[in-house]
Length: 126
Image (cartoon, rainbow, N blue to C red):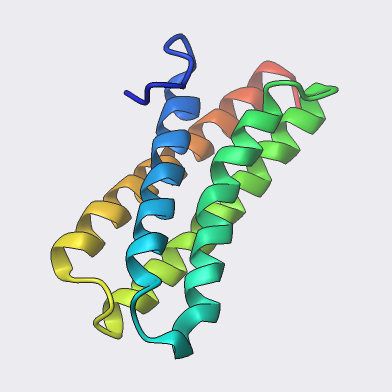
């Protein structure tokens, strides 16, 4: 558990934040790598941390529709992050072990987001 994170947060909040922390650490690891791929490194940093930002923004959504929209944006960002992780793995910038760990976390977030969106739509008759 993260030291500065609310311990009473939802599973989605906690996991998205933990994933963002892992993405930042991965980005810092990459900064010593091939500078020609800097644009990709920045993209995975942006999309990977955006998942958590949008999940957290959803907490103070103005309406059920706004809540669902924020989760949809988080889902799109998670899907984009998975693309970048696959690209980094297929070009040998992530080892199998590193990729499997990050991809498992990202896949879990995608599943949680899909489930949360479905539940929110059902509960709000949307």
